[in-house]
Image (tube, rainbow, N blue to C red; front, side, top):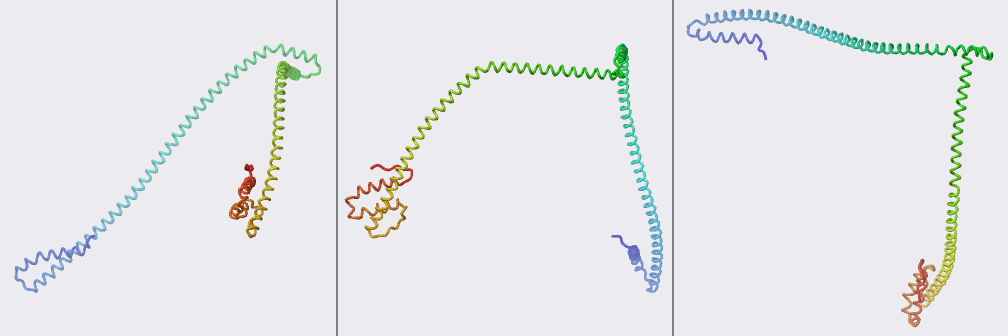
Length: 321
């Protein structure tokens, strides 16, 4: 941080006075004189300070003016730089535009040269075509005279182009008729060839169909025989099922009667459902061996109950005795 100029001068004066005090101490001067000398020194120092302040202000004003001049010159230089940069940019843009125009002109010139060469080639082709048509016109002059004579002989046509158009129409019609005739002849030949192929293949086809018919007839007879066999088996199965159903009904009735007899013998009411045949058999099997009055008939009765139990199960055949 910069020290203020007043403080700087005060410090300088103190140093100057401190250097003079030892010299004055050596002389024995009265205090009044020393005071006067001090005052004179202070006045001189103040004048020197004022002079230095004036010089400082002058230098400060000069430096400020110099700084302002330098800032003005800097601004002018910046403006000059900006203008020069803009000038360079404008020059570069003009140069680029000139280069682009030159490139476009060269490209257009090349296109014009190519177009001129194409037009020149087309002109040469047209000239050759014109020469060819002139030669053809010379060759067709007799035909033109002949057409004019034919037009005089044919009062139905007024001009030669009308006669030529009529002739062209007839020629196109004739060509179309000839083409149609060739197509019909080709179709007729193809139909004849197909007919001949069918005639040649007919005996073999008839023989093959006869053999196939015989095979199908044999398969039909075999199927009929299998049908009869399965029908007889189905009737047998139905009869067997009816017998088993009847046997099952009888067995269930017998088991129910036996269950009721066992319950009556034991003096207990029936606790099982009427349709619960297996439970009834289980109940009878558990109760009958304990009854002394049934001991003599227990083996035969147990075997009969076993057969009824087997026949009551679905999908099982009755057990043997």
